[in-house]
Amino acid sequence: MARFVVDSTALDGLKLIHRRKLEDSRGFFSRFFCAEELAHVGFTQPVAQMNHTMTRRCGSVRGLHFQYPPHTEDKLVSCLRGEIFDVAVDIRRGSPTFLHWHAERLSAENGRSLFIPKGFAHGFQTLTDDAELLYLHSTPHVQSAEGGLNPADPMLAIAWPLSFAEVSQRDAAHACLTPEFGGI
Image (cartoon, rainbow, N blue to C red; front, side, top):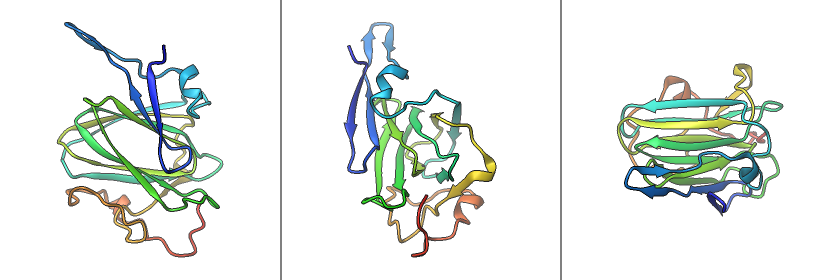
């Protein structure tokens, strides 16, 4: 029996994954990752890196981050505590949905993950205090390949659910997009 239910989104390759929970009086069990099952989604490389974040303040924004080729990465993002508004922006050169964004609410309770394929920028806003995330990456982080979009960029017009409580200086300093931005 498949432990995941997968829904497509309007952005090609971006998938919402529902982890099935088996519950009893002790609590629950859910499969977090299965290479065989998630290969059908597009996560075909081994997990190269796992990152765990905790964001203290509700309304905080992290991102929108990506890596330039040849270090592009697939990500599987899950919320382990609290709730977030998770955003992926298509920055694939030539994509019919170039610069379109899609968001999902991920929480510890709903057991959902977002599979974000290569060629997307990723960020999130916390909807609760002390939100914790776990990221699985297909390639290791390469600092010299870091890229980012400004989360407040009017060209993206992301409908963040809350006013920004906090944004890092680095994320706020990303220039807004110009027509010259051709994607990756």
